[in-house]
Amino acid sequence: MISFGVWDIVLLVVVSAQATTLSYLKDAKWKALVLALPIPFTLAALAVGAPVNTTHVAALNLLLAYTHGVRLLHARAGVPIIPAITISAGGYCAAGALLRPVLPLTEAAFWATCVLTFLIAVAAHALFPKTEEPSHRTHLPVWIKFPLVAGIILALILIKRFLQGFMTMFPMVGVVASYESRASLGAVCRTIPDFIIGMVPMMAVVRLLQPRLGLGAALAAGWFVFLPMLWPLVRDFWGRPAEKS
Image 1: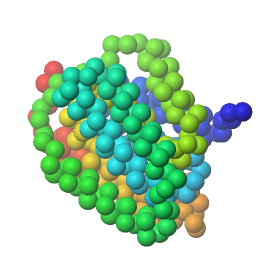
Image 2: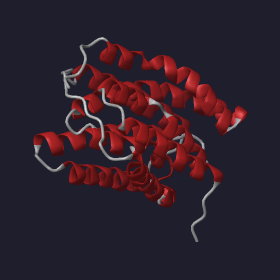
Image 3: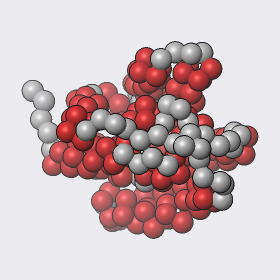
Image 4: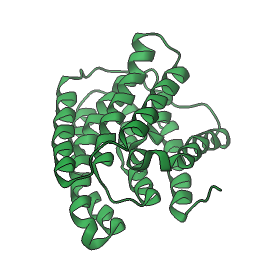
């Protein structure tokens, strides 16, 4: 029998609202900012209820792979956007389900994964080119868009026990961002490394504080570390000319 906890319901409502809001923003820089807020991670971590561990950090790499997977399939290989998203999201879930039982949850594994993930994000930030891309805003009415988004998140909640920590980084908002930014997927790909650069320190703080403060308070403290780390994202997007309409 499937049961829903309070945090499952909060996750469903709040993240659906976040993703729907992103859909109605036209400028890619504002989409990027909304996408980069770690609201899904925070609520998903509370819904899963497990302490932040190696799987949470490793999931950041799958998020990066998902984002570039959609771009390569759609923009390079010509795969329609919905199949490209479905294939990439399915790959994320499959990889997460396979890695979850075998990843070590030791302190050494956690910190080594943090270092490796941070270095990968820095490299991705430095190497991925910055180009001007068109803006886009959804034309679907909110009463259609919101249920569609909520359906995706509901499906993820139903399989959270198979993913555990990997569920917290599943691109709940990213799936919507990929679809709504299908003409400017490069902007999404530039956002994720900056997001990861902020998320690794946030997860490290949560890891250190959660034994003494509990998961909820540790996540709140992690936000104070994450928000200043958004500077690379702000610099990248607000320092460039406005996107083409």
